[in-house]
Length: 340
Figure 1 (cartoon, helix red, strand yellow):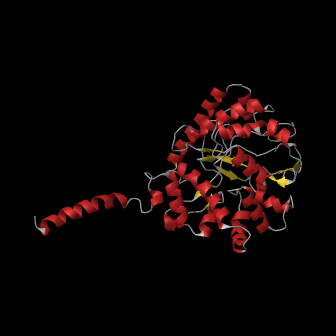
Figure 2 (figure 1 turned 90 degrees about the horizontal axis):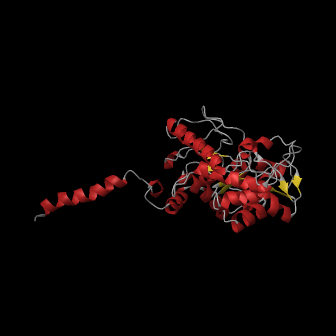
Figure 3 (figure 1 turned 120 degrees about the vertical axis):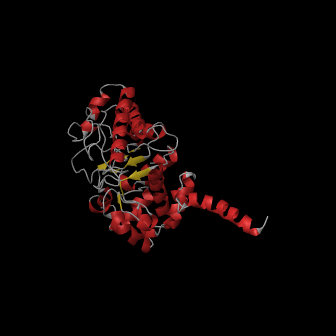
């Protein structure tokens, strides 16, 4: 066969796979690749400024990589709060009063059904532009122990019993996140880790609690949400725990949550909490130092626009934080976004 006859066939066989591959300009866009490969590929393409932009709840778009903006956060304690009209179920404390984890699983499944449906209605989120109205990452459920009736958020909880809260909370988390082996329906974020149950001086108080009480009473619901519910995010609390702000508490977020319980998701701050490390707790002197202790303490994502948004890059440039720790946080946040 002459070369003139062979060449057209060669061109056809070469162009067919290239035509298919052109839809995925970069590896991270190829959904057929392993998640770890995709995350690693994207991280290799991000600048340090772009990585830090991923650690803010209102993450802006990165047009050069065709990455849309992503505004984390909404509430779904008994129905989706923002982003349209949704079914409203009884308050959380009333849901717990059913003593029925299976029923609560049905409730949270309905909530995430509506969230995904509205996400599609908004053109896969492209037309949903208001911050804290996201329809795929929810700061729910609240599984703090309700110890004081003067606490304004008691109705958000499942009451004062750690076992009941563990079972109801775990069912709620599973219903939100779904049961697909590869993808998340939505992200569930149990909160506020930990011992957050009073209004007085809420941004600066220090909860002095023995380790025995923590492990027997305050921790169980979170441990079950992580180990049985497979929660993909945890929200830290405003308060300090035994002298260390929860948002920068390495023993709490790294030793207990990650090392002991095996948590592999990301930790997001309660909104504005990183600011209070310096402003209210006076745990450090500067906002750059607040960025350092938060990042090293295990906080991945800032709900707010201050410490990570304005001061984490400065802390990096001044040698206070390492790229290794920034990369750890970015990888955790991106992994959840890819699973969605």
